[in-house]
Amino acid sequence: MSNAATLTKKDFQSDQTVRWCPGCGDYAILSAIQSTMPKLGIAKENIVFISGIGCSSRFPYYMETYGFHTIHGRAPTIATGLKTVNPDLSVWMITGDGDGLSIGGNHLLHILRRNPNINVLLFNNQIYGLTKGQYSPTSEIGKKTKSSPMGSLESPINPIRFALAAEASFVARTYDTNVKHMGEVFQAAAAHQGTSFVEIYQNCVIFNPDPFDSFYDRKVRSDEMIHLDEGEPLVFGKDVKKGLFLDGMVPVVKTLEEAGDEQPIVHQPEQKARYYANMLAEMEHPRYPIPVGVFRKVVRPSYENLLKGQVEDAIAKKGRGKLKDLFGQGDTWKV
Image (cartoon, rainbow, N blue to C red; front, top):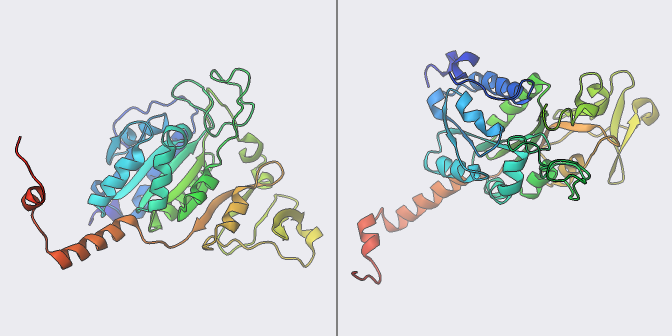
């Protein structure tokens, strides 16, 4: 750990050729992560990246750390097991909207509710990119793809609401066209004790180009996105300043001039009740600006610490025991 403070972004760049399509948002995410790692003050040998299957899941090859490229949808299982047996490691799990919310949906749900101290980054481009452009669990209704030539009939999953429903203790959203914002969110996720879940809007230039441009393009983002800053009023707008206000239990957008003396909502991600975070998660464009930042940040015991306490309690009551004795006790027979 002594040399961790001297590390730079270059120290986290592997010698592997990065194989994503030119213009893919994954490049920006990779750059932001490699820039974030030195700021954590953790030695490279104590950092592990674990992924499933998909374009995003090539990530471990490009990080000069330890890593596992696992099987489709099962990265949460490997990550949980690793953190359980070696809780001192900084574990980062990389997944996509298909890998994490389709075949891996059940596994993702359980890692979030168990709350091991792991950072989960879900790249959301609303398409299956690696398998050449089928609609994914986050694709909009009516999406025409190779697997839905007449348009998808399925309601899309909202990853933020999914994480909140699974009782995730840290839930955030960022986007690939803002490296600074990504870095800030990644650092906040790393500082959280428990499972952090970060959705990243990410552009697939080949099979689903510019799905988020209506609100995150640099020309419009000031008016179409709202940044969630803890303790700060929820205001946005480049020229005409607007705010988010409550009308009963319903959020409404007003200009600050229209609101007069009425005060906009002040962002409080540490609220334990999920109503507030869910309200933000349900805000959809174009009716509302798209929220980005930390939606929820609450304190819950981490899974590996609870397990450690349980094991220590059992040892204190019954002694350490021996594996040979365990195998030989109870009803046994010879074959």
